[in-house]
Image (cartoon, rainbow over all chains, first blue to last red; front, side, top):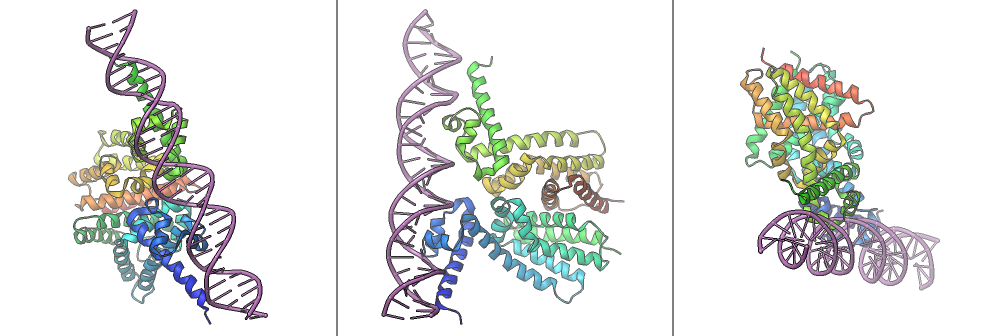
Length: 196
Length: 196
DNA sequence: CACCGGCCATACCGGTGGTATGTTTGGCGT
DNA sequence: ACGCCAAACATACCACCGGTATGGCCGGTG
């Protein structure tokens, strides 16, 4: 049976992560102080440093939280029973849509490489969105839907393009229009490389 | 006639920018202190704050310095008298090669959007590398070399893809190989969209 | 019921960005 | 040649923040 203590501990921990996600999203990593994160979680820095080894560790926890949400949605789509090509297209739309989330955009796309260091960020992304993009591309190749291309670098190109495109959408004055344009360009490109 | 005083002032200013570029490249924005930047330029923080309004302003000066170098090389190629298609290809190679510069990569590609804010970074990039990519694409369309696509978003996709690809190259254990692969994928894609 | 250890609060330190103020120095009018 | 003024720095200091050390509280356990 789960102890009362564990409930409390877990509760304050998740409160800290929630608070961190919100503040990091609004003011960025450098712009938010640990005191304020702790204050909004109604604890003090002491509690924070009991659960996390420091500011970076707390950021990574926030990163994981944000990435997990996106991963869950993407994984559900990509594991469906539709044909690979349709799954990929739906996954593409879902990823673009996920990138519109301010938290995902600022924390996972923009600040994570700087805060965590590019190496560590890359390793983490392998387990999340990027890993899904790569395996999807691999599936398409295995299914004979697209030409055989270097999977690793092509995935990087796709990931970079989509991330920056998503930022473009989110900060546009007419997100729907720009989003549709981007989807059009990508789909157009995909059809070009699709085997006929 | 240029006064002696102006020489001194400009000299210390450029010394500060040089020092900033090197340190920001090596340890990142948050990891370098103004005292150390000033120390390496053999001045004190007083001089620094006389020439720049603060840390951000100094970073933007470093950003401009790094971007200008790349812009100069790219502009030279893209204004050549070869056919538009060849110029674009050479420009592509030069851009990838420029991205291998650690200073350009860390300062202009990775940290600038975070430090300057995405909005301001985007406006700045319009005057540098991204502006060139967009106008090159426009030229290709005007020359009838490629299909008419939404220039703005397609340029963003290209820019994002190339930037992240360049990072991939630079941190690879065999940069030449990965670089060749990326060039291959891009050129392959470009040929797909090229009008026949 | 006592006591142990995880959970958290409080107090404090070092370093950093920023500011306020003092000091030097080169140009320039007279 | 002299003196003054403003630009170009240097110095001293403050506020804030990340991190650490220490102490207290309280639920679990024997």
